[in-house]
Image (cartoon, rainbow, N blue to C red; front, side, top):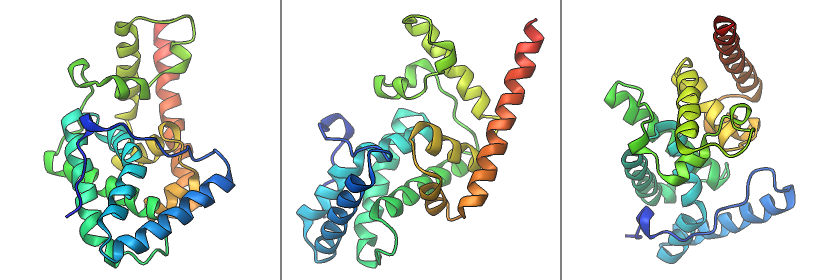
Length: 219
């Protein structure tokens, strides 16, 4: 059984962002394919390397959906356990990263359905890394705000995201926070690119309308 490292023990290089060039993405995808083939032959070190290559992004995706630090860590462990036991059935028709992030999203949704609540972000639950993920740029451009201002801004972002249903919220987090392309989101969400574009447009429109109403009420 491959060891799945705990978050506190990590000192891992994060995979490059989606937009860092097609060449780099192609190289990483080919490396993943080779590692998957090795892992499917019971090479434990190959699977552990896949974990190290993708773990930080899995944590970030789960953190964007769940927010609760303990939930995120639990889900990340479950994701890699599920990937470990399922990897021999993975046919590589999709990229390993797409397959893995799809598992992540589904595990997060399962947890939310079990809890039957949408977790809110509280100061005590924010790790330093998670606190950096949600910045309301329009509110934070004038100098360096203190922690209370940052937290207040993130609470406003969370409140706005709570207007969206689970699927739209996940799409928006994947696009705006994690930087996935529309095509990648379509694969992860088992949808098509046009549907993703429409849902993202409507989600942004809904949030923008709420912000306009809020600003109008303050005048």
